[in-house]
Image (tube, rainbow, N blue to C red; front, side, top):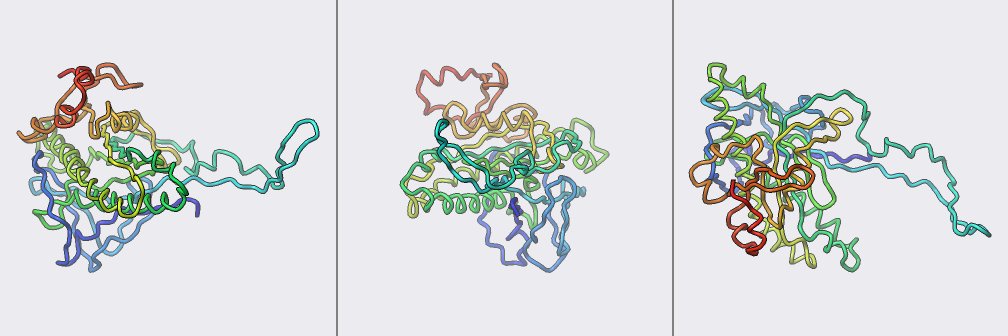
Length: 356
């Protein structure tokens, strides 16, 4: 197996009274629209599933997913989260010195396997339809410096393992509404991909299911619920990301100069799948990637499709809307940044942030 898949587990959510998750709150969001994970079996942990294609998740052990928004039911799926691991191509080579051409390499095995299949994303020509998502990119600031240490092979694999284990656990935990049993603020991301110094997550925005929650709701009320739903995810990620210093404190006991900060960029938009769901591409992924290192800040999200009315009144004290140029995207993009971080930038740099 060249590709390694894992699943964002819902451990602790349905633990039969043995719940050990830390209490979380969302001080910046309303919580009218939620997704409920209902336990109807006996096991306390979601089993591993292997289904990278959205809409084909298999549940074992009698678990099912529902939603609660004014008492309505919305089915949902927890999808397998996949790390991007490419195949390797390592035929046997023999090095020789040609009398006039210098060093050359003789391939002692067939080179036929060198091709697009090494990307390990299936049949790239598989037809695809646009899928609306919330793209989230986490990036470890200082990871390149960390890899330059003496004997990096002794530290990097262990650190990456510690980090991704912590990251998946925290995302799962921050999306649990601790004031209710078996309730999440949103589905867990259906797709994940290790990017070398961070992780890309995609949250599916399933408009068909959202519209089907309550067919009696007017479009304005439905849009209000959708805005709150998206803002709950953003606030949850902001809340958990602030816990990285605790992870860093433990990491400093094991590693020399580990990455000092966890950055996050968020954008909403459409993606298309490659290889039947083995990978995804789309402008929102590029925007989220740009925003995770936006002007030296550690948290930013695009205003495209995220209405600030979905946050509560405390929102204005946490985030600030600015009009900025994003390389490769546009010169007048609306972006939300953390006010506290913005205030700590040098005055000359702050001048580039134009209030919207």
